[in-house]
Every structure is written in structure tokens, then in C-alpha cells.
Amino acid sequence: MDEVTLSGLLSAKLCHDLVNPVGAARNGLDLMADETDPALRQEALDLTHDSLGDALARLKYLRLAFGSESPGHMIQEARKAAADLFARGKTRLDWPESGVDTVPAAVRLGLNLILVAADGLPRGGMLAIDWTAERITITGTGERAVLKPEARAALAGTADGVGIEPKLAPACLAAALARRAGVKISSESGEGQIRIDCPLPR
Image (cartoon, rainbow, N blue to C red; front, side, top):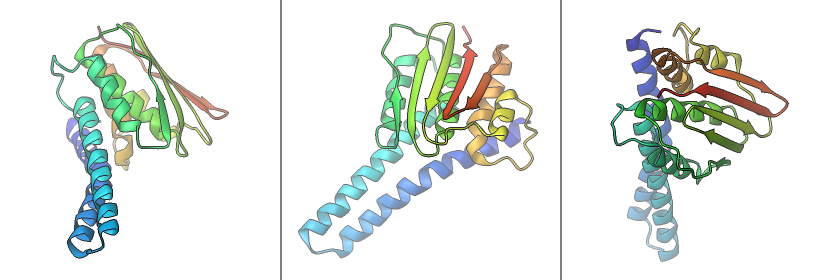
């Protein structure tokens, strides 16, 4: 996949993830402007607050996953961004704290792989992250957990970019990052569980 196609997919994914919470925040502001009942105004304020919190969590995570490899983007920051991202949804995150640190290229790769795994849990579930200095292993369990063939093709770097949906952008970026680092992503799926495993750049 060429860089122009990949950048377009990443931009579309970013916009897709932000349009709902930003739209909900706008609706909350509109309700506050028109509502005189104090209880209903408070409900509108809560809606706005929650929606903006969701949008901010997504922005912070995607900045680390899609953005440049700043030296400051270390694993502790990535773990907090992931915790904030999944705090409001139906997918729970099990990512124990550890003293492991890693290079920025590994942070980007790992965060994109987590997005791929989360997309494989359409009804929510549990994402268990085992992140060491050498590799990352992500295990997702939940009802109808599955890595679709197109997602596995994107992770393997065999997708050509034609007709690819924006939701596959993290898989395509992960494949590009893995290829640049000279590592290989492996994935498997079945019986309510998915697993993604990859050595990390060092």
C-alpha cells in the first residue's frame, strides 16, 4: 500500500472516531441553550462533558498511535492513553503496570495492534496486554470475537488498498511499521478469542 493511500485511511479513521462524540457534545450544547428546566440542563451538561471526555481520550490515543515518534512517547503514557480510551466502552482492558520501557517505534506499533484487537470484539469483552521489552501479545476474548480475513490480510501486509475501509487503517499502519522494523505480526482467531503477537522494535 502506498503512503498516500495509507495517509487517507488514517485521516478517515480519525474523523470517523471523532464525529460521534463531537456531534453529541454539540447536541448537548444545543439542549442547554434551549432548555430552562434545571434538571434537564444538568443532563445536557453531563452529556456534553462525557462526550468531550470521550473525544479527548480518542485524540490522545490516536495522537500516539498515528502521530510522529516523539522521544517522549513512552510506554507509561501509552498505557494511560489506552486506559482512558477503554474506560467508557464495553471492552475492558487488562494491562498490568510494569517497569518495562521501549522505543517510540514500538509504542506506535503496539497501540495500533491494540486497536486492531479491540475492533475484533464487536460486542465487547476483555483485552489482555502482555507487553515486554521484546514483544507484545494481545489476547481478546468476548462474544463473537473474530479477526476478519480482511483484518488479517492488512496485518500481514497483503492488502493492496483498493476498497479498504477506514477501520482497517490501524492494521495497515501496524503492518507498515512492522515491515520497517523487520518484524512479523502473527494473528489467530477462533472460539470467542483472538490473539495478536509481534516482536517489538528495539
